[in-house]
Amino acid sequence: MRRLRRLVHLVLLCLFSKGLQGRLPGLRVKYVLLVWLGIFVGSWMVYVHYSSYSELCRGHVCQVVICDQYRKGIISGSVCQDLCELQKVEWRTCLSSAPGQQVYSGLWQDKEVTIKCGIEEALSSKAWPDAAPRRELVLFDKPTRGTSIKEFREMTLSFLKANLGDLPSLPALVDQILLMADFNKDRRVSLAEAKSVWALLQRNEFLLLLSLQEKEHASRLLGYCGDLYLTEGTPHGSWHGVALLPALRPLLPSVLHRALQQWFGPAWPWRAKIAIGLLEFVEELFHGAYGTFYMCETTLANVGYTATYDFKMADLQQVAPEATVRRFLQGRHCEQSSDCIYGRDCRAPCDRLMRQCKGDLIQPNLAKVCELLRDYLLPGAPADLYEELGKQLRTCTTLSGLASQVEAHHSLVLSHLKTLLWREISNTNYS
Image (cartoon, rainbow, N blue to C red; front, side):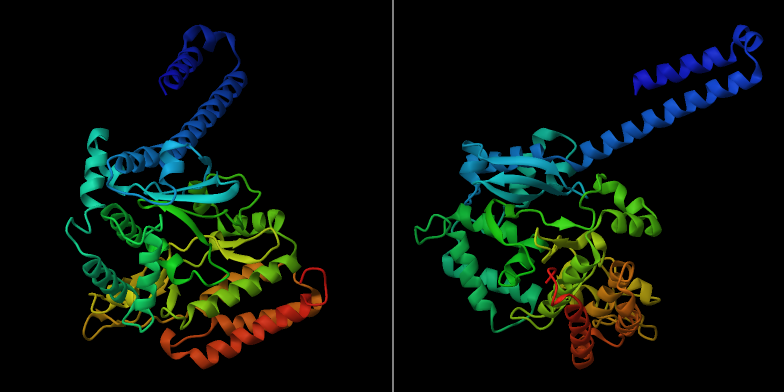
């Protein structure tokens, strides 16, 4: 930036010096001014790009903090030795869209992986030396020394009930969590193992990965160290092939967004196959073994797919359990419905008489997904399908009523859409 300021001062000095004003025609001065303006804007864009990247991409900070806690014996996990001692976890491309949630593509045990780690505590400290101790005290503070395995089991069960609801399937999930915590299979859960698993459970996406681990459209968990965890390789997304910084994507107009999707996205039959997978994912979120889940940020950025164009949810951060959403909204003060929003688009009605939000959502998952699919599927759709597809998507987007009360109609509309799309591609190579 110092060099940029010097360049600006130099050009301005030249432009407005009396000698140059006398020798150059006015038109030439304008050209020089335009060139200077181009240089300034270009330099500023490079600076902003670099600043955004350095702010968003701090995987090295994450690794330093995690490995510091591992070497102190505070945390443990199946990936710790490879990450901190053997250097066998390779960090590749930064995919982060927010500074507090670090996301990288990587390589581990010859497999393409996604590396995820939260560094809110470290980033919020002004002085780097205080970052690690604060993380130790705040994030890895539970369970405390002397906690028995029975107490930890009860503690975990209470946490799951608060976040997923009081479900009969939760004790089995607790057993799976304790089994995962004992990564070295010594039939005991150490304090470091318990602290690591507890910290992981505080991560919304990790809790969702556990809850949806048997579903084919959620990424599979591969390993962890502290609250850093690895999932299977990053799925292609609606931005695959478009080299844009994650922070810049939300700034693009929706028209340009759709145009880029058309230019760089897969062919229409592949999009139809991906859409069928997305609709199946909506089914999986509705009354599963661990309750109902709501999609609270329905955007193309979350539409991922594998090399064979099978749908994979690219990001579970904004998928929330019904119990969590209800707890956040119910009884919340409001003047209008816009005051009753969880995440980006999970909206509940406002009781204006009581001035409190209700717990049920107005719009079900399917209606929001169908709004997304109108822009994703209608452009480029076969002529003989276009009218019927548009009609069904319009019907789907008008689904209203409380999200918990539309099960029958919801299932019927979803089934019709899947059948229509599958019939179009079932006898082709795209199926």
